[in-house]
Length: 302
Image (tube, one colour):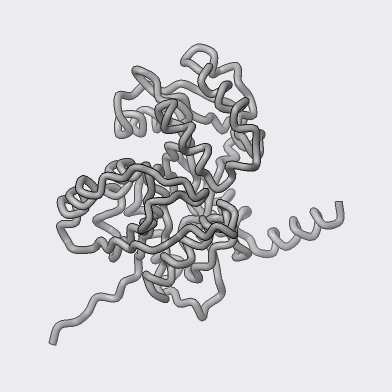
């Protein structure tokens, strides 16, 4: 009798006009994932309702070439609802994808432009937290620290420099996949020691303008002004720019330039420039539910 392997590590990607970035992100998680879902709007519309060009033949050929262990499922559905705003359509796609992947296990959602530094270590960390998570257990998100790439230059990248070690982080994994603000929800956020490189704005001028206009937060900041500032960045002036995040400026306190001809080179060189580590003591403090309750109470009293 053949035993069916329980799928614990379920990885989902929201696929869109920038699908070719999957060529950097999927190989970094493929070996350790038990199943992978690529969700794609069947009408090729963004969360803002804009139609985009999509090379179906190249996409299908790439999936066939990389999926040597038959782990990948392409899930196509209508993810755009005109009555919803872009962020609500974002949430809708993520929730439908989670439902498609089924209950149980660790649900991990990764954006196409996010590249794990060490996914195997993250999987080991998740299984140590809970080797067989179910939606009946206390809900929790497991967060990953992110290093955003902001601009691709001829010989390298402009990168966010978190001078005070307060890295930006986002929930990647959860045992109860409910998405209320992209990957965020009301679950407790447990911060891991894992890192991912986020190629957030490091696109061509045309690609970035397209992304900004189709982003879930596209209506939440002055796109034209921000885009003009981004275009002016180079390897010399980036060191003078502070608080560059379009929604929460202080989240990206300063910038630095890192050489590298491709993503793999940049990741190697960044590990020489930045400290990809959070101490166990700091993690214990940040992951204490009691301290989190006290911080929430203090914020309400202010």
